[in-house]
Amino acid sequence: MRLLMYSKALYSTWIYYSADRILFDAGEGASSILGNKSFAIRRIFLSHGHADHISGLIGLVNIRNNAMGDTEKELSVYYPKDSYLIGEMIKYISRTNRRLDYHLEWIPLAPGDRVELLDCQMPRYVEAFPTQHVSTETSLGYNVVEVRHRLKPQFANLSQEEIVAKVKAGERAALSEHYHQKLFSYGGDSVAIKPAYIADTEILCHDTTFLDESDRKEYKHATLAEAIACARNARVKKELYCFHISSRYKAQLRKLELAGVPMEELDFRVTLIPPGRIYSVD
Ligand SMILES: [Zn+2]
Image (cartoon, rainbow, N blue to C red; front, top):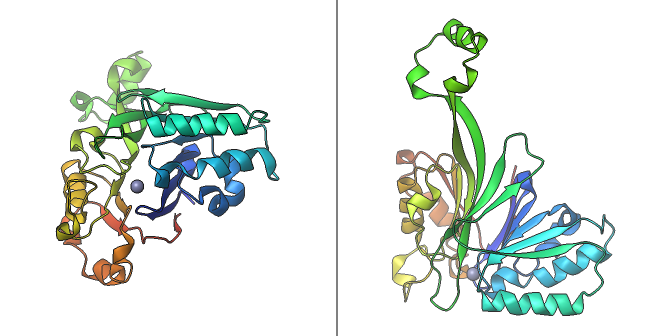
């Protein structure tokens, strides 16, 4: 299992990204559905403070202290700084959990802030980027980024022998360059994300509250067409997961999946996460 997702607009949203043991948002029911996997979570990144994205924190913090598992594993929760609602949640959880067995840390983030992820083969970090949800609530999206090496373009035509000769001559460092590959991008409840923030990501999770533009009454959340346009402009490499779909489309979803969009023109796969169903990706 690489990803475990649950998303139903207005009710609950959370996505567990197992590669780095990260939970993106923590809507209601996260810990009861994750069960023992709740103990695997090392970090939680919250996109904003609305109840459908944070109400699962109470259960999760509690279960990590009480269920059959390693109750001493530390947990870090990152959130958009200045979020009043999350500030109140932190106060509540802190007052009602004065004696946790594990270390629980709350870390405010601003756009551009980075969190280093340890225990990885290649250096990795999570980077926060700005998103736009509602004017009354500050919100962030997050990229999981890996720092990789590649041959500098000017050496692309060298043969294997020439490369080996240069390495033997002590020129290894001059041959290659670092680049930052986004592996996973999560945008929370944002309107269409600015493609520059998620450029060339492998996997994008984009709000798709509305499958049909005519159902959107004010400029909030995103439509399926916007999510696909965003992924296309950002040159998403592998997958677009459309989440936060309104339950009004529950009955139609199958039909829409089949009718779909002109998938053959896209470089990535599009998956609609059915509202109210647990969705697992291996
Ligand atoms: Zn929401």
